[in-house]
Image (cartoon, rainbow, N blue to C red; front, top):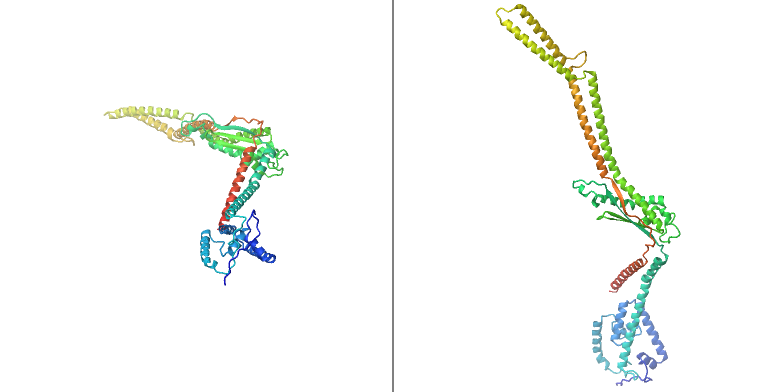
Length: 514
């Protein structure tokens, strides 16, 4: 026995704004008790679905699949429930789900003609108040409104995040720079280090007086002015720390009275800036302070420190060079003095002119030898006669003997010691040695004098001078802080941080969902 399919009848109005859902028809047909039990069942199913811990990606897939199958779901969880009630997997991909749904419909087609069966309200007669085209248009409108609502929500959340993480910090930074920050007055100065004139012709001398010659000195001076030692000297002379510890300085820039030297040094490096230009050889210095007069005073004091440091850089080298040449000159003078004293001592202890005495003795020896030769020649002539004159021979022999004795005595005066004293030849030799030593000492002294003079010239060339090109002048307007530039920089920094964090969070969410 078969039964004809029947469609449920409803009391509907012609101009109803909304079609009657199948659930409402079921409630009207089954009564109040059945409707309450069905509502409880639906609520329990929704609660169990919420307990499953489904991700946002899965819920979005279920919502899209329910819209594709024309299921009116009140929420993403309701979409999951309705799909499961239809026998569809809500978490399959759309193409797979579409294939399964089409296959399921084809398989279910023979079952739909079997009778008796309960016909759903959707497959019945459409409502008289809304046509399918109107219902489709209304659903499209609802989808568009939902999309617009979600876009507005996302835009609102984006603006809220930007306001909290970007705009609000930028506003606070701008308020500080424009209204709270203490104005700083800066004074600028420029100076350079020069060498003495008189460049040489050597390859090294070609760079004398240029930036290449004073480059290391300029860098050393810059490093000294940026050191903690310069800060301590400036604090002792000009009360640097007290200037930044007054109540006129804002709390962020104020230095505590009991602050350590390290904290004061950080503040010193912040407000005293130096730069060296190697192409021009100039050192540029900028000093900032809450008072323009203090900035000028600090600049003048630092320039004095730089002058002292420049003088100390070459002072030791010049002093060492002059000391070495002075010591060499004193040694040469002392050696010459000793040589001269030795010569005078030798001359005082003997004949004043040993060479003249020796020359006289040699002259006597020559005369005696000539006389001796003449007498010997006369003696040999007498002895050569057959009958020599004996008296003449004896006289000549006596004269030859006397001359020989005299010749021996004169020669002995040159070589033999007399009364414990050295010989005349040895005394002459000692005096000659003393005179040679004195001549050598004179040469050494002359060389030492020349070396000393050259050392003084080189020392003068090594002198460094600090020439101030631009003197510091008190500023009438505050140079820092640059409120607009600093505010813009703060905005860019906060925006960059927010962008990096948002990208990191998005990447992590994508990886976790996939």
